[in-house]
Image 1 (cartoon, rainbow, N blue to C red):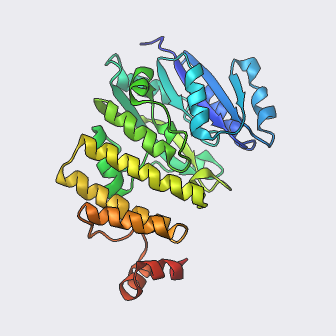
Image 2 (cartoon, one colour):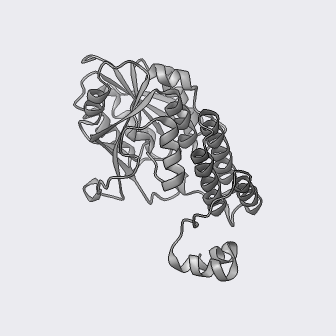
Image 3 (cartoon, rainbow, N blue to C red):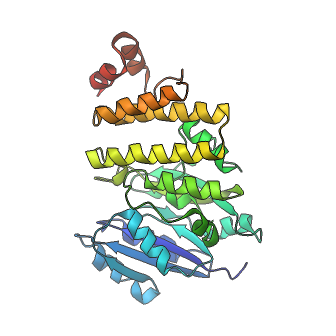
Length: 310
């Protein structure tokens, strides 16, 4: 295990401002057996010039026309030689001992375990990150993790995971038709293919927030179509693995807050999401919004309340 090769895959599209720091955090890992693969996904800014500087430090650089983050990750996987895979978005960071700490908990326990880690948001300086424990910061089964995701709206960003390559191969490739929330759908398949998710509280990653024009913040029609489809697929994955009353209730609430997220940008999809929630029995839980919205929703209905509160 001490010599297990880890492949760190970095998809990069127009991340000139941040990709150097992301690569530095990968190069600086205390785990010695690693390879770093950066996939330049048709960037039109100075990302290529930044990334090329790292070739002399052993970083593998692959270039392709713009096909999206999922396609870039699949391209990196096709190149990767590692026994373990670490995905790292070009604007995120890894703590120096992140790989080492997660490989400690994975140990020699085979290729059917998936490791999650502590993570925190930051904007400019990773020193501002605050690692506040979340409900999913513990060992879980795949269905338990997905139920908590819908019940508590808690997540893991891609860099928080470390996975055996064999586990990813069983789960299948990234869905290249998805843009927004492609990682949620992908890791749902990975965690359901695993026997167990093991959590490392000492391994840390950093999720950069409020990035201008970030994929996660997009609300154009294509992105909202992707959000709907990713939830549709993920709910199907969950209910195929666990059809219990708890799983159905969690999925119903997941569809309810998806309806909220889709409005007003895609009102038709929002209505479909709300109907999907009803088909699973509905959810009495409130929409994920503050007290001002809740008051307006009781008086005017949630759609009008969201328009007013925006």
